[in-house]
Every structure is written in C-alpha cells, then in structure tokens.
Length: 324
Image (spheres, rainbow, N blue to C red):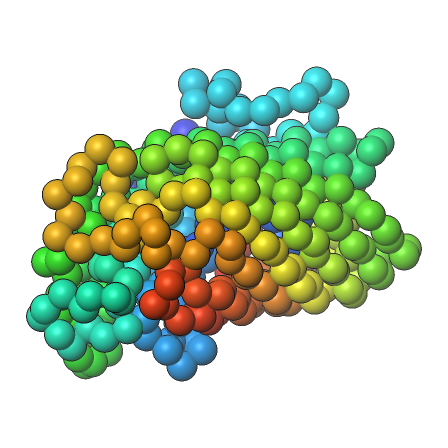
C-alpha cells in the first residue's frame, strides 16, 4: 500500500473512534523490531473488575520512515548514526470519578476529563552502546471536544449498561502541547533470554509535567530492542515471546486531567494543587508475542493514588499490530 494512502486510512479510522489509552508505545519492552508497522491498543478497567478513574481507551499508531519528513518530526531528537523509527499515534484518554450514577459533582473524587491528541514520535537506537532515546511531541485538546462523554455513553448503551451521568462537570476545553523524552539503557543481558533495562522519562507542557525513573525486566525468547530495525526482515520470520515487568516512580508537577487546563480556568470542578500526590508509583506487567509479521500484547497496570483523597487503580490492555 502507498504510504500516503496508508496514512490517510489511519486518520479516517481514528476519526471514527473516541477512546483512549495510557500512552507508552515507545517503551523498550514493546519493541516490534521494525520501522514500519501499524498497531491498535485498547485499554479498559473492566478487565480488572473496576469502572472508575482511567476508564477505557484506544490508540492508533503508525510507524514509517516517511513520517521523519514531517515538520513536527524535525523537532524531535535524532542523534547522528542512530537507527531511527518515526511514527504517529492518535490517542484519546477518558477519566471518570468512582461513580457515574450521580448527576452532582463528587467533591474529593476524580473529575471527569477527556483528552484527544496526536503524538509525533521518534525512537533513536544506538546499537553500539545498547541505549534508546525516544522523543515525542503531543498536540491536541483536553475537554468536551475530545468526545469523552459521547464515547462512554455509546459504549454503555451498546453493552446495555448504566448510562453515565455527570459529564457536564468535566474539565473544560484547553490546548494540549506536550514534549516527552525517554531514555533506556541496557544494564544486563543473558543471551536472548533475559534483559534488564534502566530508564528515565521527562514530560513537560500543558498536559503533564512529570519526571519518572524505573527499570524493566524482560524474560523469554527476546527480540532485543537494542538491535535496531536493520534486522527486521529476519525478525519477521521468527517467533519471539517474552514476559515483562516494569515498575516506575514519578515526581508529578502538574496534571491537567486532574487540575484543569493551563489557560482555561472555567472548569466546574478540579483537584487543588495542594491535594495532588507529588510522588506516584506505577507497575506494568505483560506478555508480548511477535509471530511473523503479527505483534500481540496483553498487559496489566497498577497506579498508586494520584491525589490525597483518591484510591489506587488497575486496568488492563490489549495490543495488536502488523509489520509491513
């Protein structure tokens, strides 16, 4: 398929969906081994028997060398001599309080919020030093224009579940402009069976200001994320499968989904800055399979409370991709 036709298909498909995911597509343990692929990721806390906070979502992701020619891609980190992957991901996040059966504001609970943005990303792999630098620029909107109310209402009607109430109190429309940088370094490896990585992440902008650090451990028949994409043709012919666990600690400066947008202060209810949890812990665990050109993943995530009166939260996700 011609690159421009494929890109157009991604946008048309994305326009028909109003879901979300917690964004982590450039993580080393989610490596495909290719610089050309299409992936869909669907999250839902229903998989972990809950229905609050990060409720559900979808991400549509396209990687192709041609994206490196885009104007926004020129703003990303591109070290000379590194193996590069360029991509776009359309994400739409949806959050709710612990109850969606009340038409009143639930003070002390999480506010309703939805975020829709296009993420332009680049992954630079230094195969000689076993390290990866990922950078991304997210542009979009937070608020009713992201379609969170319509998405959740439509899904609940389809499932013949309770119609959610309270979305009129959601965080109001504001701009999303965020820059993110991730660094991954191989710490220790045993053949193609065990891989231990250390990593750090910085997010800055109107959506989130956050600094994170952690590690991830991969076990199985590995497709090392530090081999780059030059061997993608051989990877496509093989079966790879690994388990991973990835704990992470974050220092949180600002979160618009909790505190409202930077510029628009008309949101009917938000979490005060003094009540934000400045240190959070998140753990991701899952299984990844690469079967020929097919990429599959199942993951579960745990997140400690994000504000003083909040609770911890769990959700699960499914990812399916096709290398081409």
